Image: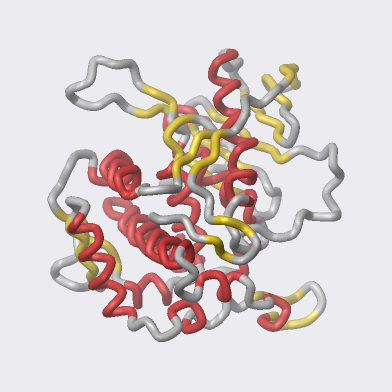
Length: 322
């Protein structure tokens, strides 16, 4: 990617967050670690090095998103007191995570009502490769994904689900160490991310839902698919990641409709009155402009083939789908 100036900000090439300061304390149910903007809660005591990585990762996510000359984040909540932290609950095991309210079939969750993030510690650990003698590393892909949702806040209801999930996966993929991101020439990082969290190896081809399918999915339909299609639920996350990368690449060059789409006035898309209202995502034709989705799929497939990954688009009932 060749960075371009979009609006008043240049397109970011990287971000290296400074180590975050924190203080430890105890609660009635375990341990608390407080940084500038976050409160990390755990029933088990976490090691000093692990807390360093977790709080640095947490503090870095909003800062990384703010680098983009795009309206990815809502205005800072004036109702939130400056001293009121964002809460992340770390559960040691999958069982403890489920008992604390984590949805079935998930290992990380952003609760839009409470504003809290729940993650399972077991799944924050990067498994070592089959030919590696190195100890497992902490990459915190899962934590970054959920923290993106937390940072985006009400934008989650204003944007299509494929876009919010794709942005979360994008940031998780380009983080190569706690709080460190590389946005420039990130195709290798995205491929490695897909291999690690989904393909569990190096297949020659991956099959993802087509653009029409992803564009039509509601948040409810997305959740149902997570429950009913557990064996291949990640396919839609992978497809969303590839679509977001496509639009990011265009936006970095001042092309495409991503910037205009994100700036579309949500107040014009309210249905209902008072507290009983819902937001309708902006018409996605604004995003695609004059780009035909079928042509975009061919462009995406050709791009990733040049990087060594064959991408196939399929309808859910297409015999070619996994």
